[in-house]
Amino acid sequence: SVDVVTIGESMVLFQPMSEGPLPYAPLFTRSVAGAESNVAIGLSRLGRKVRWISRLGTDPFGDMVLSALAGEGVDVSYAERDSQYPTAIFFKEFKGYGDPNVFYYRKASAASRFSPNHIKPEWFRGARHLHVTGITPALGPDTADAVKEAMVQARKQGLTVSFDPNLRRKLWSEEEARRTLLSLIPLCDVFLPGLEEAEFLLGPATEEQYGQTFREMGPGIVVLKLGERGAVGFAESGAVRVAARPVTRLVDTVGAGDAFAAGFLSVYLEGNSDREEVFERALQTANVMGSLTTQFKGDWEGLPRRDELLRAMSGGKDVTR
Ligand code: KDG
Image 1 (cartoon, protein in one colour):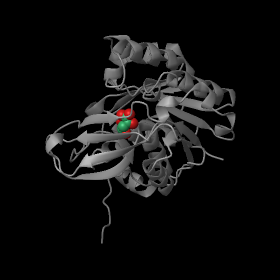
Image 2 (cartoon, protein in one colour; image 1 turned 90 degrees about the vertical axis):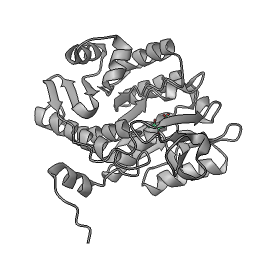
Image 3 (tube, helix red, strand yellow; image 1 turned 135 degrees about the vertical axis):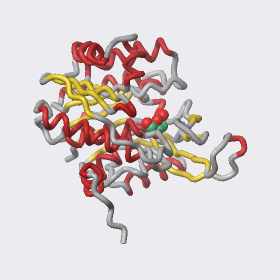
Image 4 (cartoon, helix red, strand yellow; image 1 turned 180 degrees about the vertical axis):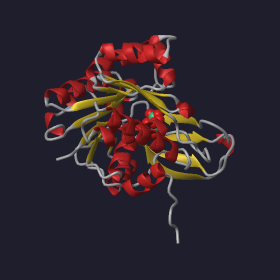
């Protein structure tokens, strides 16, 4: 049995070895990334059993995605292959500061063909929690319905559900994004937007108003990610605010939100997150995870194992030799 099931597209990722404009980047390293599999890897490294599900082409890149995730201890046995549509790829472009640019080649990918009839009850059997994001609904004609179906089926089987809106403006129109993301919030127990995403969804308001409004839509827990200001969480017991862990060398911000989600969920799964000290520790863990992963190139390569996380959280030093 598994702790967490997550569903969403993973792609082969090409990262230029040099900084600067992509047309002049001659050499690339190759990795695998996708918001949901980033979360899966984060949780797996912290000792949780995670199942990742997506659709991949029957191409060599599909093999690559599977072996990368399996190598991180993630259960990939329910991933599906499609001989008609390929595995997606994407590129990052490092400008030497802040967020890298991202270029997707994922239209008509195998995962963009996800539809509600692909979602199977056995995916969730014996599991405790489902994590999904707002990327999948943006991918294809039936993917929003597929995500909704997954959330409904998971809840029917008693799983709790977390939802990260992960707004990707390159993938869909603002109106469609807003309408679809808002429609999924009532189906989750834990909602994890960034401050900008909250504003995108609800318009200008205070952090407290965002927390309250989203909670009124359904989720018992709402966590607003505030970047370098940390995070504020809203639950039955009230609001908890935690400061960010300072980032000592910012290399690649992509994947920080996924690391945050993995950190939060790793504590949430312990139970009792309605207790203030557990909720606070979940937020602190999330923050530290987010900051650790921005210090390395790649979405997830810099994610810590449990002992590394505990050391980072206690401010201890690594023993390296
Ligand atoms: O959260 C990180 C993701 O954005 C990245 O891995 C690529 O899944 C991806 C996406 O759709 O943007």
